[in-house]
Structure formats: structure tokens, C-alpha cells
Image 1: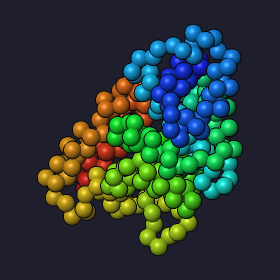
Image 2: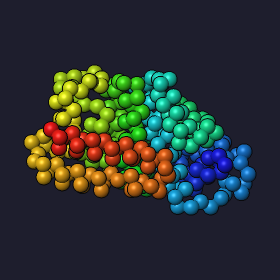
Image 3: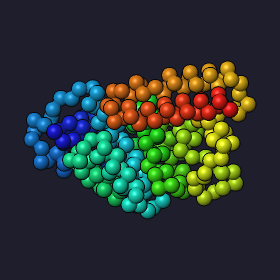
Image 4: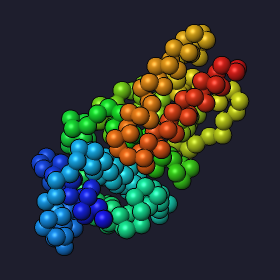
Length: 255
């Protein structure tokens, strides 16, 4: 069954009001018009609604990041397509890409959309959104100032703590001191060690006991089980953060 009978229907039910409903209303209505009435009115389980909420929130924010530099890059669109195909299959991805295309042509009130997501979702849910938005932004190897600004704004509006934003950002890149072009850099051995401390969110002069304490705290906070209700496709992404944290810990302990 396609998104029209599962995630799409759940989304209509979940986003019954607010800025997201206003943004998606016309587009979702056109998708649902071809569905059987019993499909569009179907009752969905809690997990289906949560997965629907995450998926459509993600596609909206994908559109925001893609449009940040006022250039819709083919590589960014392909990233989204590949992600959706790998996560949900070809047919479902086609429908979601239609929605993305429509969103790229619309003005999006980012603050209002993020505020609705913030009030209706858990913190681990929002951390996964930020992680995936970073994956999109750095996919082409370049992170421009407009993208950095968009990621900061989205994170702030979603209520993500600055330490968590910095920690996730450090999993993808390190800003070179004095650099403003936003380009990714090649890590030296020292850079990699410094980056490991950034990922754990602790000072570079931390003791081994402090490193262990930070690691134990983060493994609980970022454990993939916290997003298991979103489905295996999102657990896989969460596991990436978990592995990055483990690698950072090992790097420090071995130094």
C-alpha cells in the first residue's frame, strides 16, 4: 500500500490544524482525491502516526535546507530521492518527491512549522530531524553560509540545545578557524582528536573519568532504541550517531 493509504492518511489526521496543515492542505488534498474514501478515513495506530509526522516534517525541512542558498542543486534532490527510496521503496518515494517539488515552489514559514513540530514531538525525534538535515547539507562536500544559517535557525526553532547542535555538527565537519567559506576540511590526527572532544561535548583537557562519564551519558541519550517507534529506517540513522559517539570515545581513550 502506498503513502496515500498509510503515512499520508495519518498525516492528514495528525496535522489537523496549524501552519503545517495550512502548508500541506492543498497538496495532500489533491493526493487524497484519487483515493478510496475508506483509505483516506482509515484509523491508524500510534506508531504509524508518529512515523507519518516524522516523514512529512522531514520533507518540509529538506525543502527549507535545499532552498537556503536559493539554488536547487540536482545533488541535493538526488540525496532526498535516494534516502526516500532506500527507506520506503520506489513507489512511495515518487509520491514524496512530488510533495518535495511542490514545497520547493512555496514560501515556508520556518519558525511556525518548527514551532508546531516542537510542541507535538519528543526531543529524540527532533534530534533525528537535525541529523538528517546535516546529512543533506554536507552531501555535496560544501556547506555554505546560507545553509549553516538555515540549520542554526531550524535547530533553534525546534528547541535543540546548542550543545546537541554542536555535537551533531561535529560528526560531519569542523569549521576551520578564520574560515568563512563553510567548506569542509581534511582532518589531521590532531584535528580528529579535537573533533572527538567536540562530539562528546567536553573540554579538551577533560580527565579520563570525565570522558567516561560523558560517554555513558551520551550512549543513553542517543541510543537508537529511543527512536525505534519511528521504524527501522530511522533506527539506522540514529545508529550512525551512536557509532560516531563510540568512535570519538575510543579515539580519546587511545590518545
